[in-house]
Length: 304
Image 1 (cartoon, helix red, strand yellow):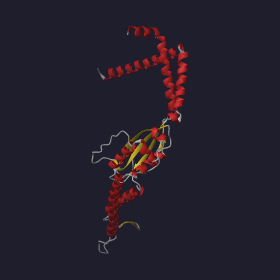
Image 2 (tube, rainbow, N blue to C red):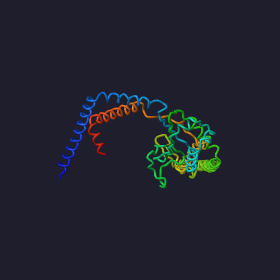
Image 3 (spheres, rainbow, N blue to C red):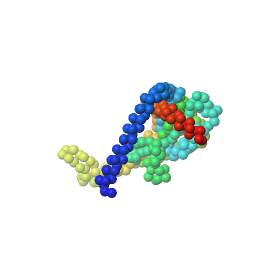
Image 4 (spheres, helix red, strand yellow):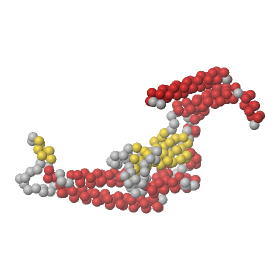
């Protein structure tokens, strides 16, 4: 078989597929018209079902939020989230959750935040869980995770957010881990602060005897002072680390810190109506087929 024959075979297969689709649509339309007294009520029932699905009591709301914490707290934070979710009903109420929220809870998903460019700026959420945590060159951010909280019938996520923060701030093992990690963080920040001052003093030191001048000029403008460029690259690296640690310190006053409140999301209303309509049509066609082949079905059941 050459390439032309293969393409021709594929075209014929696609043509037969579309012919089968058109045939199924025409048969379904004819069946709907023959048993319109069955199909129409089912379609109406499906639309009503879609309408009920749009109501808050039947809607599952997703809350999306990213929490930050001190570096080195990743495993402890994951353990804390699991411990909070698995708490019995009574302890959960002690942290501010009432029966409505406890009954509405449908799950909490935790995803890694990915930094592809290694610039400490989040690039995307790893919802496919494709990042390899054992890879020494992995791009998983070490100071944050993304949460997806699912509540059915409840669209206010603030009580759950407050309960999580209160839980983390009252657990001794979490408080101790946070204290240790932030102590290390402060020691690193102090080191880089001193290093900036040290390099800055070196950059102002004149290593060359006058009148020798190594500056680059263009017209009457001095482009650079060569004798002061010796530590520029080191200074940039140190400042990058210092600024990152300062940002972390300001962003993590608590054990877990919500960058923004939970952002509410749910399935679009129009999708629910379309699914309800489609479900009503399918149900109507199935009932119409059952009525059309009633005798055949009854005979088959009697044989069984």
